[in-house]
Length: 447
Image 1 (cartoon, rainbow, N blue to C red):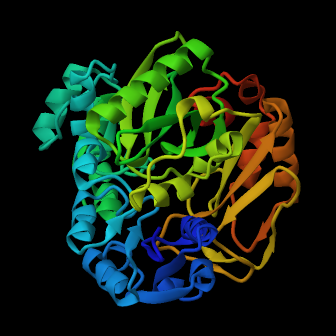
Image 2: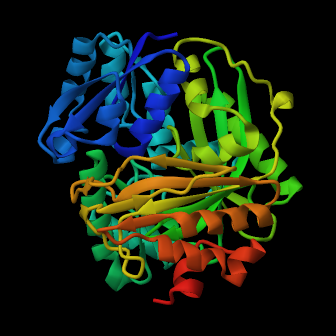
């Protein structure tokens, strides 16, 4: 096992990774921008180093500086978390060339799966059903119109080299296409350093269901079942749960079997997620593979008892998985609510100082937070403050526990989406378990 790991991220995920390192007796090295000098992850780490000014391109996206600091700290590995450089093939390659371990898949696997267009090509060749769309990146406005016309409107414009719903938008007709393409390119470039995009057919009434996988360097791979992620705003997940209430045993078995087959065919290592759309009629379609740890990984940990960060570190250190598929069992039901500093009606960010913070506690409640009372929420980064996770013996109990936890949660000084989350948790369609990706805009907040 490593003795020291540099965490190339910030916020709640950096704090989560620090806890994972501590569990294994590994020292955690934090990095921070000038805006994050007093950040929680900086306070919690064993040591911390300044990256540079607040903008991500000169701080958290500065590959050479991150590697320089890892060497300075004498870290043996770099964990990218999610977002920023987590799915950047070039960064993984630079880390490897520097003689450091990248806590994630190989650069080759990131190139194969991290690029969404090439991932679709691979899955199509492997016989895995994919969402109809382009198999290559869109190069020009003329090509965009031509490809969208063949697919048929509405189309989803997606970033090829990113994830987390960033750089995604829906064009419902030709008039809206150029705006959606330009916006997607700009957002993807800011977030991931790449403006490449591709198109998918926008499926109106779909469920977003994903399969968590783990694989080592010795040919072993397992799945940790599936998660439902259909409560979304701006194509970003807001509430996730495991198991998926919209997925029966037959569909679950087919999805997990396909996921493992894909992982083995790629020669994938470390943690990853196969993201799919299901149509409510027993069919599923591959969308993309996230070649990293997911924001919503805690719900899988809650029902399986498997620490995914621990497994990531062990695999990256060259250990064999100590898990076999037949040993992985699930118990109960888990929900995660993402707590954002944003207006719950417009979804616009709400920067400012947190003047009062009361965090929920109790049995079955887990809070992965990156903030504290007095913290200044920046305009430079994603407004995610924390992830509230609850476990219950069944879905009804988990929903009730989440309601109680949200009632305990107090954040003053900035607006948050807590009122929205409360509305979702009492809506009949959500309670039925048969909600789709359009739930927020077509049912809860009609726009």
